[in-house]
Length: 212
Image (tube, helix red, strand yellow):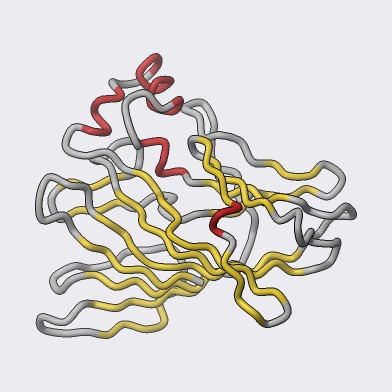
């Protein structure tokens, strides 16, 4: 479940998507889970030397195009885990390597059939429009803009790889609810079914979507 707001850039800085996501994930395997990988796809656009942009430069286009005006990235501000009804901060157990982050839960492993419940606050910055993502003026194309848990395959374990110019997104099925706030004058287009919209005049526009 997402609750986010778009903050368009007022200077040469990149536009900001700021908000939170509640993630509920049920362990489908037969072995305890000790760490949880999360995709931070926007980190692929954090600078000209990222593995993704270097590979793009080798085969497709100049990596500096993604940062023509500003680069992008995704930063997790806080991570909480619900344990027996109590929210416990575990941000210090999260480590980032390029477009992947790893959450260490060895102190309380997730057993087969158990459910992991996380509450995450994050900020995502959009690069200049590049490779199906980014912003230009008042146009914002937010692709893969949120922290997304990897895919766990029973019998194999986690399937979560760094985002590469020759790869593609591999995600699990799930149920999504999103509440998106944008400034007056902006319109939101999204996958899923829109079931609520509010705001008029100079008020922010709030749109809610559901998908499964």
